[in-house]
Image (cartoon, rainbow, N blue to C red):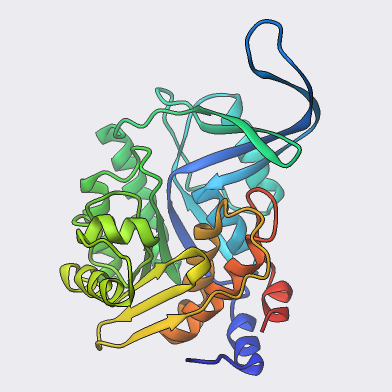
Length: 326
């Protein structure tokens, strides 16, 4: 088992500062409404939640951006917002985090994606989604491509965060990933679809256990099937590495030199897994952009995930919190 020493981790994370990372993906707002349930509604057999407080955080690719900020990087969100009040709330959240908004593209025909979760006594009662998951129009694709061409020369890496909300069309992916390859950018992608065919060329892909199983067509139920699935994904794509995240069973890293590295979980307590994948890809990409190896980057990402699953809701991890776990 690979062991990352604290001194090496400190060297890698010190280089996080100021790294310019483009985050292309589905931007969302995560709204959490907290309260208590004391009675059932007389109108229908549902609980009545007495609201005590509510929070609003950046979700989806926005949470990747938040994690990059928390780790000291300078991210640039490249995505679509609507022409509505939620878009203004999203802009305010980005501005509060010190994030440049020049890369946002407005689509007046789509709502800004908003996910509202109502939580009572630490249990989610219901979730309401406001979104449009249809593929973006060609003129919006053009707008996103123009921004990417403008910004990629100053970028240290690219993260593609797919939540399957219609942003990442086949054409947009093909053009962006080809341009990134020409620029020799490190590209890490968090997938959401069953087919990974359009996810190339890449540096690293980070499917979870279920996504890896569906994409490879192999039911992952033991070590042998895990290795078969990981190698199938890696060999079917123009990709240098595949990192399969497996929840309480940790991670498995497959690299194009044939190596397989199993990374056990370091989470002490799993309280909420919301957004853990965002933390993984943010940390992994930053580490790779800072000169770390694939294994070192994956181990750091595993430690970062171990921190955020111990927090409620969409959460981030700071450099100090990350180093404290090593």
